[in-house]
Every structure is written in C-alpha cells, then in structure tokens.
Length: 265
Length: 296
Image 1: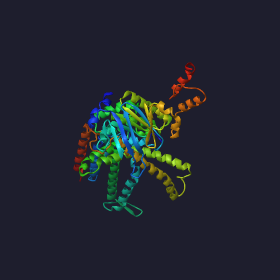
Image 2: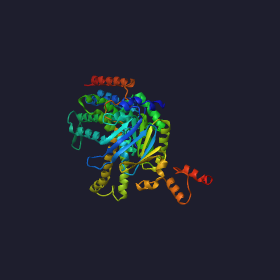
Image 3: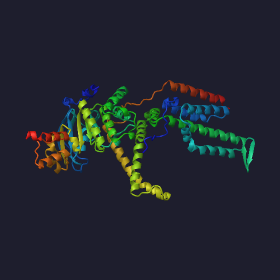
Image 4: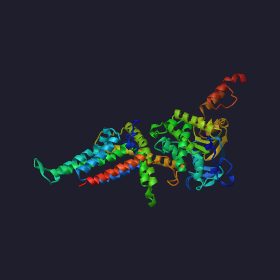
C-alpha cells in the first residue's frame, strides 16, 4: 500500500483557513449554508461569491484539489441550470431552440440556483480540505457538548469516530492482503458478470469481518487495561483554542451577513 | 526525570498490607464458565518489585490468564490476588490498572490513538492527568523507548516493532510499578523482537519496576531473574533460568522447547565434553569452551 495515503481530502498547509479553530469553521459554514438561501439580488450573490471564493483563495489549497471536490456535483449544477432554463416561463422570450422557448427569467433563476450550489459545495469542501478528520471529530465533540445534559453519548460518538479513523488504513491494508490471498486461490475479482463479481467479494468480506470483530474485542481489552472507563473524569491531550484569528473571522462574517441583508431586494 | 516513576506510593491505600510492593497470588483458581474446566488451579506465587519474572508454558497452560488476573481484566473464582497490598476486586481495579501496565500481543489491536502521541496520551487521559503533565511525559516516555522522532506519526506508517515500542511508552507514561508483557514479541520479526528486548532491558535497568514477561520464546526467558513454568493450570516449577534449563528432559515432556545454546550444550555433553555450568547464551557457551582445557 502506498505510504502517501491520506484519509479524507485534507491538504496540509498553514494558511489562515487552516489555522482557524475547527469549531469556528463548522459554525461559520453552518451559518453560511443558511444565509445562501437569503440571497436574491445580483449584489447579494456577488457578496457571497466574494466571501466563498475569497475563503478558498486564502486557504492556498491548490485549485485542482478544490476542483476534485466539485467533480461529483458538476453534473448536478449543470442539470439544475438546464432544468431552470426550460421550465421557468417568465420574463422576455430570449430565443427559441427547436421549439424549446428560453425565457430571460429562466437564465437568471438557473444561474442563481447553480451559483448557490457551487458556493455550498465550495465552502463545505473547504472544511474537509483544510481540517484533519481528527480535528473535525474534536470539534463535533465540543459542539455537541451541551447534548450530554440530555444523555446523548457525545464522548462515545467522538471516540467511535476517532477509532474508525485510526482503523481505516489498517483495515484497508488487511483488505488488500485478503484479496491477494483469495486471488492466489483463484478468486477472480475483475472479470465476469456483475453478479459474479459481487459473489467474488463474499470470500473477501467474510474474513475481513471476522478479523474486524476480533480486533474490536482485543482493542476493547487493551483500552480497559489502560484504564478506560468512559468519558467521565477524562482529560484531553488535544485541545481546541479560540484565538484572535477566530474573532476576526466572526467579525468579517457578521459584516458579510449585514451586507447581505442590505443588498437584498 | 526518574522521580515520577518512583513516587507512586500514595496510590496504594490498601489497608494494613500497603507497605509491600509486590504482586501476590494466593491459592488462585479460575475458569471461564461454571461448567468449563479450570484454567488455573490453586496457583500461588509472589513477584517482588524490581524483579524480572518470566512466565512460560505451552498454549493453554494458563499463562495469559495470569496476566489478565493481575490487573483485574478477569477475577478469580477462588483465592485472592494482591497488588501492592491491595486486593484486586471491582472497586480497586482503576487504581490497580494505574500500577499494572500491560502490553499485548497484537501491535495493531492495542494502538488506540490516531498518532503516536495521541496513543501515548490515551492512558493518561483515562486517568485524568493534566495536559502539561501529559505533554511532559509523552516526550519522556517516547525517549525512553527511542521513538521520540515519531511523535506525530500515524500507526500505519510504523513497523510492528515500532508499534510495540509505542505500546511500552504508553504504559510507561502512566508510571506503573509493574509491567506485564503478554507475548508482546510473538507477532514480530526477529529484528522487531530484538528491538523490543533491548528496549525492555533499557527500561528495566533505568526504572524501578517489576517486569513480568509471558512468552513461549525461551530465548527471552534466559534474561529474566526468575522463571515460573506453568503446566495445566498449575505452577510446575519456579527458579532461575539456569535451574530451569538444566532440567531439559522435563521441559520437553511438558511441551516446551529449550534454547539453541542449551541444546548445543547437551550435544557437547553427549560428545564427551563436560561443561562446568549450564550456558544460557552464546557468550557463556563460548567462555565455557575456551576455558575448557584450562579447567580440566
């Protein structure tokens, strides 16, 4: 297995966006996703686009990584645009394409919705591009903290996430080992009908599951031997800190929100 | 730097027997279910502080069960176990687990953290230590096992031997009085095994702690101060490695192999050379051989 394997899409860096507290990033993105739906004028869309693209640019993440994050949704963006083009029948008639009438409002609507999509995906993928999975896990644990009061197992959830992250590479290595072992016994994963290929996965999955359960059992024993007894009374090595930079970003975001409501129609 | 590994005495508030720093098994019997056969039958022994004890025995002789009983992962049906004078029971296991560190066989299945430093911190986090103390001890214990350069590494980039060294560091970080290595080298290649044994020797010579190694690799056993041989759930023999290996026929009878040097010494004996003592390693055998003529 390649040693360069990275879980998730994280692109290491030291930009402003990288240095923001993950909780701040999640909160800002959450509110950004909400306010995107309030934009309804060229100016307001322009403001949001400026914010989104500005954030992406200041993250210094190479453009191709950002584009890679957008690939699965390009089709969706294009599809909504075309749909709006043909379905909306308001405003002046722009042109007639072999019987399909395209109206002005259709183009405007289509462009607006597509831009919304684009901004949503851009900003959310920026989170995973600039934040390590474990930072996201820590942030989620902190942000869900209040739910502990209603007995929601926040700590357990975060632990499950971090252990999953820890074991993804291990299980992938194991999958590769098992698939080689099964291939050497004549299992063919690559050719044959779809049904045959699905069937070939069974001798891969069964040993993988058996070993995963064995691992879980041993891990639980090792954790207990090291004094694990749930989240209570536990301290944490990794700590999150809200710094000056975070407050600057909050301020900037508030300015954007105010600007948005001023430029709305 | 060593001071914190020594100053643990306030932890052992176990009544009248608190002065003794040792692990004691008193007539311990254990089985997994009520109708299962006994895994351990009336086992008694003591392990003193700063002693290195090896527990050997073939598969199913009960040696791993002993390890799990020592830090309360299992409880005996009969008899008592005392750790530093404190009886092992469900109320005391958390304090006991702080004193008894354990390294398991599979390097992957005991690595909890997403990076080396997170894994070393795991035990300390469980015991509610402050962050400053954790940071300090992470570097100290990683240094002790020679893994300080890997602090930010992820586990899948480490070899089995390196992972086991991290596991030892994780245990050291909590400053236990006893460390149990439950077949910690069994899944490693010869190089990894050598690394671990070297690390263990270093740690034991520098820090005041008892080591309990559970193994069927007899090469490892030769370095211990004392050997407990388990057979069919009973303590079959106790003694120094030399005493144990001088009774080869009996060891082979209960399904244990003897070290290569020991076998070679036997063959030499058969060939008519008489050695003055049972050699435990190559060095000793060499010494025996080149002084053979002068001692005659």
